[in-house]
Image (cartoon, protein in one colour):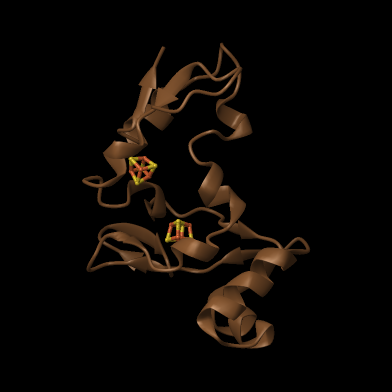
Length: 126
Ligand code: SF4
Ligand code: SF4
């Protein structure tokens, strides 16, 4: 169980095993990745940063986001492994992914956690 100060929930990492990757799939969204993370991911994939950007990222408002692909009735991160239902670039996933579900928008004792609880079964309200 993981707890963090100022978050009104605990997170059970063991839920990820049988989850199917709910936080990598579903509604379309942004998966922000910074330059240092782009460098690390390009290295993991053994391709150049330019190739990574061209094949797997898109630019918006001066930032890069990882592209998505159609998945079930919604979308999935392009790096979501549909066979194993997990992240195919786990070692180089961006901080946004590493920090989930402890995102600023869910911080604070009054945060509305209903959407988060519906998405992530590892989240338990306190
Ligand atoms: S949605 Fe929650 S339980 Fe499922 S993989 Fe993501 S963090 Fe783990
Ligand atoms: S990079 Fe990995 S953890 Fe992040 S959304 Fe894509 S598949 Fe999920």
